[in-house]
Length: 332
Ligand SMILES: *[C@@H]1O[C@H](CO)[C@@H](O)[C@H](O)[C@H]1NC(C)=O
Ligand SMILES: *[C@@H]1O[C@H](CO)[C@@H](O)[C@H](O)[C@H]1NC(C)=O
Ligand SMILES: *[C@@H]1O[C@H](CO)[C@@H](O)[C@H](O)[C@H]1NC(C)=O
Ligand SMILES: *[C@@H]1O[C@H](CO)[C@@H](O)[C@H](O)[C@H]1NC(C)=O
Ligand SMILES: *[C@@H]1O[C@H](CO)[C@@H](O)[C@H](O)[C@H]1NC(C)=O
Figure 1: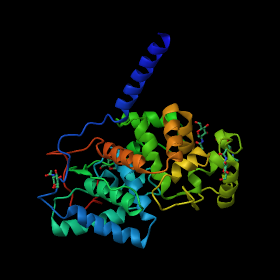
Figure 2: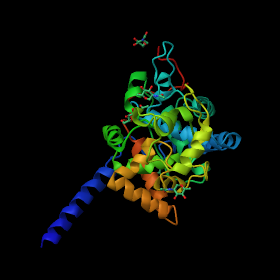
Figure 3: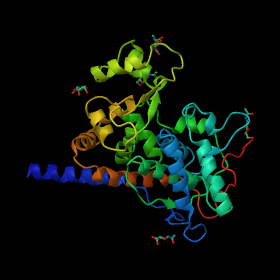
């Protein structure tokens, strides 16, 4: 009897957690193939440009994937990350965005689309399509993207400084950042897997993880010692702005695979925000299961779902916002 009661409660908790994990409803105005009639070749054109971009410089694949996070978490997926501010108060000027790359590439794609279908495809949608293509071009899944977003006109460094989770966040903080955007634990653990491709600069983790864990002048005791020794060779202590790049998933740095989960499971997640996925029972179970998985199929399906959820954050559709001709217009 008692056991049955416990089981019912457990199932209930699981049902609630599952609901929270995939709880972002499709906003009206977003649809797969929104440009079917107004710009039928839009997605192919973005893909063709992305193929060129990634072929020339594979590091732009993770950069453009990160670009979507930075756009969507700050005032929603509205292209506002692209806007320029003469007085230095735009999203681009914020602390989390200082090393963001991809502005020129989004502009380049937009210019192509403007020639084919003027004032039709939003900067916000281009960012979402480019992120999807970046994943696919590094051997990740292909998935359908919803389009129909319109561009916002407001861009504030204050919002960017406050709304983006950072490398030194623990799971408690990350859950708060994500829940403000309507995303749950599954989105956190699945989207964190984006760190399967790309690099990070020493400055983003060296203090926290190698030299001054919680301000005590020590190495993070949860970090794999072998891995820490390698990282110490790459990142010199005390350099104010050490921009040396380190690969986030060293064994396959530009292949979108389960390597990230194997890293985290063996205490080789680069950031505190990676390592901390082991501190929560739900995210930990997912990390360990993916680390042991033989096929990435389940992960790829989850990734498509989580990216769709992120793509729905606070979007402008219908008559809201605008379709900007030049993504990098000035706001002031
Ligand atoms: C666009 O076309 C695709 C493929 O035929 C279809 O799946 C999708 O629903 C269409 N979308 C719209 C908004 O018409
Ligand atoms: C990282 O976070 C921990 C825990 O909140 C804190 O003690 C530490 O000072 C932070 N480090 C930096 C460099 O902000
Ligand atoms: C480590 O962090 C503490 C607290 O933030 C700071 O006071 C101290 O100067 C730092 N030590 C080094 C070696 O950077
Ligand atoms: C640390 O990394 C080494 C080398 O990759 C690995 O053999 C070991 O199992 C890891 N340690 C832990 C605690 O996971
Ligand atoms: C920067 O420009 C914006 C928009 O015109 C304005 O709201 C803001 O007060 C300006 N900030 C500074 C520091 O001049």
